[in-house]
Amino acid sequence: MTLIRPDGSEGGVHTLKEGVNKLGRSHGEIFESDGYLSPDHAELIINSSGMHRVNDCDSLNGVFVRMTEEEELKPGQIIRIGQELLRFDLVSAPAPVADGTEVMGSPNPGYWGCITVIIGDNVTGAAFPLLGDSITMGREHGDINFPDDGYVSGMHARLVTRNNRVYLSDMGSSNGTFMKVAEGRDLPNNSYVLLGQQLFRLTVS
Image 1 (tube, one colour):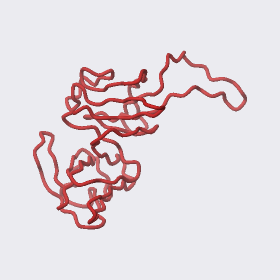
Image 2 (cartoon, rainbow, N blue to C red):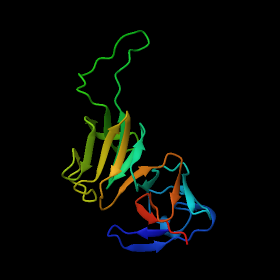
Image 3 (cartoon, helix red, strand yellow):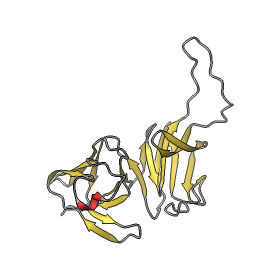
Image 4 (spheres, helix red, strand yellow):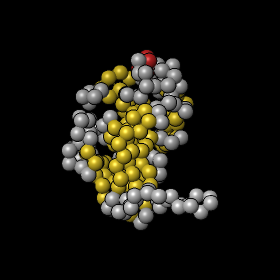
């Protein structure tokens, strides 16, 4: 695993073995100074087949993998663009409570989803309702903008709806779009994994 610095240059290297490799503050000098990493943060399984796997070890801040192609979003999925931690949720019509009373709310002009900024554990910030078939996110040119985040590209990522499903794609951003790993995820060689505040490239020779 090669550390990739914010300017794109390479930093230190963490050597991997075939089989299970533990990652976190308790498992190597390269991880020790990152306070966002749990002591046992993740495990990386290296397979001779060339398809590897990363598993989240119930870490506090999660494991994120850089997208290489369009992916379907499920409700509750957490993504990261730049320094922004975002949660995707669907918006559905409110259902009556058990005694039949209907829930009151503002008229919905057609919002089908919502992107919510995650500030901390159980703390959320701004929420952006989603309307239309395509929504872009960026620093300055998107439907949803994060103007103060220099790690977000001018036009960074896009959400689209097709056949009642929602898909996310990166729009050639400089720093990539990352999906949080729910439990485990398969990784091809040269994948990029975000652990805490550190970005690593996985290279298996």
